[in-house]
Length: 162
Image (cartoon, rainbow, N blue to C red):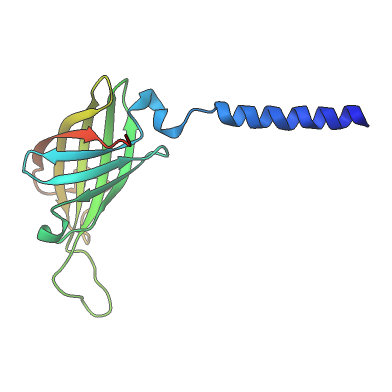
């Protein structure tokens, strides 16, 4: 009986030690992704971009209230060491509800190319903004968009606890 208790104790301890040896999420994927970055766009807009370990992207923009749009949400994917691609969507609001609902005036799609500095403290890249009519176009299929994209560049710095 003493042997089985010792065996169970050793087994439980090994599970605990394995759990502690897992990489911390902020150190995953070359140490750059995931993370949160304070971003300055060429237009002067500032935003916070959070690339999460599960591949989701969340962006809060300083332009949301001025241009009447929602937070952006989307997905990112690593493309080689120090590189990522991302897609984010937001809803552009109409000025007043229609009946009992508030359908979006349009849906914006932003396609993003990101390069991370070697130390992962800075990012830079380009983004393409397109607007889609929610009644006739599919923002998940960029080929359905009628207009030309607006293109902008950005730079950003990683948010860290010191």
